[in-house]
Structures are given as C-alpha cells and as structure tokens.
Length: 175
Image (cartoon, rainbow, N blue to C red):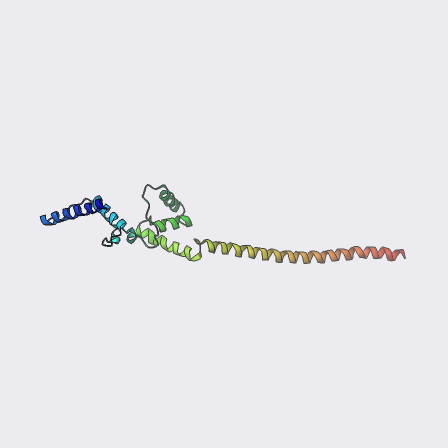
C-alpha cells in the first residue's frame, strides 16, 4: 500500500509540474491506451467507454468484430459467396461478421433477413420442419398401405371364392 500511495503522489507531482509549465502532458498513443485500460481495471468511471467500444462501427445485422483480411475463415466464406451467392452459411457469416462493403452488405442483408424469417438459421425451426415432413410421409404410407391391404383382401376373397367354386363343382359332380 505504501508503494501505491507513493506512486500516486509521484503522478500527482508530475501532473502539477506539467500544469505549472502551461503545457499539457505529452503521452504517446500506447501510453494513453494503457492508461485507459488501467483505469478500467481500477473501476474509474471518468473514462469514456464509448472510445473503446468498436460496436458503434458495426453494420446493420453485424454481431461480431470483422476478422482481418488474412484470416483463413474469412477468405473461405468470401470465396464461397463468390462461387455460390445463394449459400446460406456464406451469407450468414458475411453479414454477422461485416465482411463486405456497405453497398454489398445491404444487398445481402435483404437475403439474410428473408432466410432468417423462413427459419433457415434456427435449429428449432429446422427440426420442426423435419418432424412435420416425416409425419406427413408416415401418414401417406399408412394410407397407402391401408388401401393396398383392402385391395389385397378383396383379391384374396375373390381367389378363395374361385377356388371354392371349382371344389364345390367337383363335390356336386361326385354326388
């Protein structure tokens, strides 16, 4: 604690000397950024947090920081979008990471919003669609099997009648 108090006094003295000279203290960019970070870690509320927040630079629909140009994942999704403009995963990545320029981003954002409204990016919606599809198939198969079984039943009855008729005829002929 003594060291901390001593450091604080030294800083105050330096500020007073700089203020007495009439010149503002000259800090390099890295020092000012470090002082801002240190103020955050100490919990000082005097620092303007909006200076450190990059989210104010986000495009509409963007959720994550834009990766650097040399990022392999970014390159993959950019090339995928170039090859297949209808690729759902490429559209999602490019919008949520804000990779494209503003005009291209806004054009692609319309597609993204349409896909999102249809439930293409929601796992719950996809599962629901798959279940409905299987239920419809099973209903059709059941209906088809019932119709087939009815037809087969009728055919079997007719065959039995035909088989029974010649037997009856032989029995009648024997009497």
